[in-house]
Picture (tube, one colour):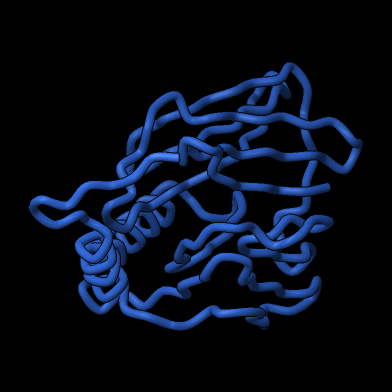
Length: 188
């Protein structure tokens, strides 16, 4: 049983779920995402009235992917029932790119419609908060929380940063790599 959210080589999000009974379902984003600012990504699994299962990917309130299978996929809804990895798959090496995570939340059906709406508003507001703290993972750094705990252990170069500072760093880094006037670059 596993939940996975990742970005493909074009930085488009995907969401994968394997169930207690060994069945699985995947949904991919149907469009490119502008990652120049923090984004709220929601991945949801719903068992419908006809016992089919629907996966959805939503970025900043806009659905970017939906997939359905004509059978129920049963999973555990308590996050403590899972090993949690950031920037690394359960059985593989750390990824060779950097990214940041601001907040990770997993909630089940116990939230009613009003509570879900309030959660969406709260998380949307966090993305726009100039004091938003994130964990910045450098390439090959990762975080892991073992099953049964919420304690995320950081490995490699992973630091707590303000999201707005990361944006400034990315802009400054881009300026450093821009060729100056009259500069030519060699191609091999």
